[in-house]
Image (cartoon, rainbow, N blue to C red):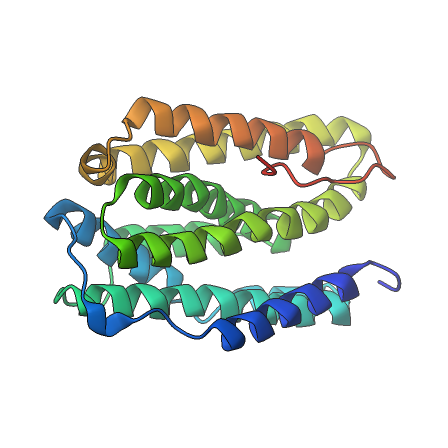
Length: 245
């Protein structure tokens, strides 16, 4: 796919990797105080961030765009760095890591059902949910180390949305025009299902940081609507960043 534009994303991911190396890690030795319900919630998110991305990388390779494949590998590396940051944060709080969790197993199986388009749509649900989740924790936790870690992850997750939107926009333009509204409907249903699940499963953690389930659901739904409009826009239109605020 010559001229697909993902060379710009490779450069962006590489620049972000250099920035991370320059700013170094947070001061883990300072320790951290986390509410118990937040710690349990972060344990589950840490499992979800810790995949190796092998299936996604294989599907990206099959798409035949070397620049996109390179960008996907850098994206996976950022997600694994999130898992490492969460592991360090939990360690600083004296909280053990989970070996796995049933919710992550379901997510992975659904994500792998079909091709790259389906995998990215399910993955982007996780990204949208993560944006609102980490924003809620960053704004609601009192501990400075916890706020720093969640802010670092939030910054990355916001950047990932337009990356996936761009690829899905390209994918949508390959569909017949009549099929694009159906793709958008599937996307909105997936996003709503993901947001509902997290609102229920992680509701106590959201409550602990003064973020209601309703507000969380409304925020994710609003962003999902914006993403869907850009994802299925007419060919030639720029799929802009839906999370600029």
